[in-house]
Picture 1 (spheres, rainbow, N blue to C red):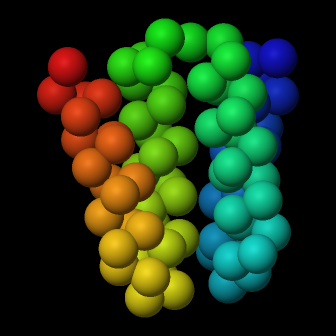
Picture 2: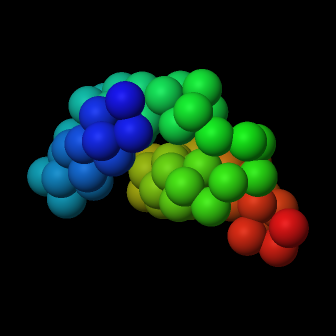
Length: 79
């Protein structure tokens, strides 16, 4: 399941590069769901995916949602 979660994360990042935010969000949210089921809530792997989700929302100018994901990533990385 860990490798599947990272595969979802990486597929999401490719879709981000292709400017396909809908698919990027789908795959990144799946990655976060899987990683959340595998790791404690402050695991760095979750920080990575939260940061990637923040980047997608930032590119969509959905700044409140971007900030939420960036804050989650920050909290994880600072713990």
